[in-house]
Figure 1 (cartoon, helix red, strand yellow):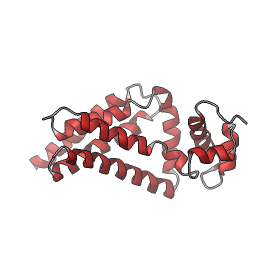
Figure 2 (cartoon, helix red, strand yellow; figure 1 turned 180 degrees about the vertical axis):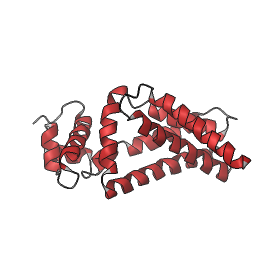
Figure 3 (cartoon, helix red, strand yellow; figure 1 turned 90 degrees about the vertical axis):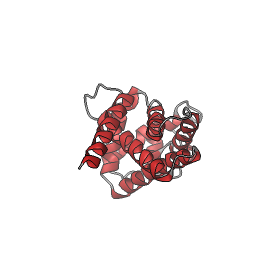
Figure 4 (spheres, one colour; figure 1 turned 45 degrees about the vertical axis):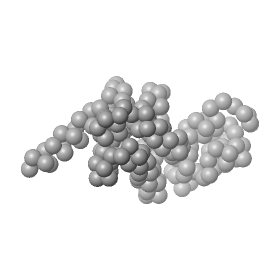
Length: 192
């Protein structure tokens, strides 16, 4: 088994998703995931704390990217524009090659209550990080909260659409579409 192979983390993610889809989350072990990826169990644990976390890789990096993006946002820009730019920058991290694996990953997460709960937690962490970064820009609390909620909702809606079979639009394009729909919905709510 190769110890220092490139892309080990990605191989482990893909192996886990494949095995979870084929055998179920509960029935799949860390040993099986490591073997499928061609690495040792010890190598698995160098990258992930447990088999659940293999599906939620990159959380700390995503939070940091959002914070950095917001801090670099132009002075005087609106909170939603800054938040939208941050989630769009985050989306650019995902190459088109990850589109099909994302669809499989979404199906695995949707199939298990613990994974759905962890996904909701991840979403809450992203929202809190984005809101906190906006607050650091002196955005009023209510505005920062709404902008973060809308931007992260758009990100998740876009990911779901991106994972649909045959989807040709890029993830950043889909975020733009989702943001447009959400702002239109907010406008309609205020008008009623």
